[in-house]
Image 1 (cartoon, rainbow, N blue to C red):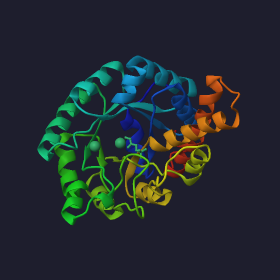
Image 2: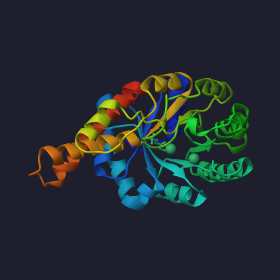
Image 3: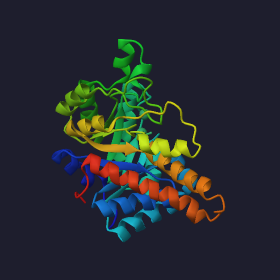
Image 4: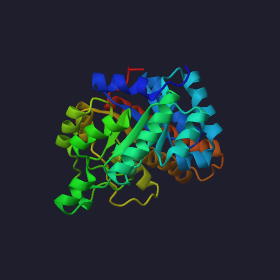
Amino acid sequence: MPLVSSKEILVPAREHGYAVGAFNTSNLEISQAVFEAAAEMKSPVIVATSESAIEYAGFDNLLNMVRHMADYFGVKAALHLDHGKDLDIAVKCIRHGWTSVMIDASKLEYEENVAATSAVAQVAHMAGVPVEAELGRLAGIEDMVSVDEREAALTDPAQAAEFVERTGCDFLAIAIGTSHGAYKFKGEPKLELDRLSEIAGMVERPLVLHGASSVPQDVLETAAKYGAKLPGAKGVPEDAIKEAVKSGIAKINIDTDLRLAFTGGVRRVLTESPEVFDPRKIVGSGREAIRDVVKRKMRLFGSDGKG
Ligand code: PGH
Ligand code: CA
Ligand code: ZN
């Protein structure tokens, strides 16, 4: 089927208490893995592209590939710009045919974030494209030493409600203690789920969790067994993800876990079969590993059967 807007995917998710994964892609194999998983699980899906992924793969390569796969696999899918830094990149994506964009002006002062987000929302909405915005900073909770520092970084519920109202954004990414990458926590993983519930009580629109990879033990072990060096890697426990979905998170961003799975798959072939030099066998193994991870996420998020 043709690409749909992310609103069509996320509004029902928020309403019915499940979440849909936004999986980052930058090449053929990751995209295939995501779509194969979605088709098998009968799940809707959001395919996310960062600006650097677009630079790597090219606008039209990504667009045509994802558009074709949605059609070929019969999956309800949106093509989303992840962490768009300004109006310029958002407009470029909309012109090319992306069906969802994020403006991430969360590093700016609050009023500047409001202004930047409003500008993108105005333009995107004219094209019928929904907008995700971000309020708060993604940093590991334990990196925030003082109470004041924590308060400044994490999303304030009342401010979140005002922000959505003033900007007209369709989805809101919030900071409740997650961070990007494979090293999210030094000690015990901790999410501020009470804060999430409070935000969800004030904001009816779909909420988004970034930095949501779990760094699953088995995925990490496979990568490490075949030579990856990732000491101290730690993600968000799957139980915490489940709780977050119950509390109003409707879109969950996953990149790191796909990268780890891919690395393990590729390393396994290269290590176990040193005679192999066919790129299809090498990256194909990474593709399989990603597919398994994506299927597991869809079950965890409850989006299976919702396509
Ligand atoms: C993410 C991905 N992309 O926007 O938020 O987070 O690094 O936890 O996969 P992870
Ligand atoms: Ca940000
Ligand atoms: Zn993110």
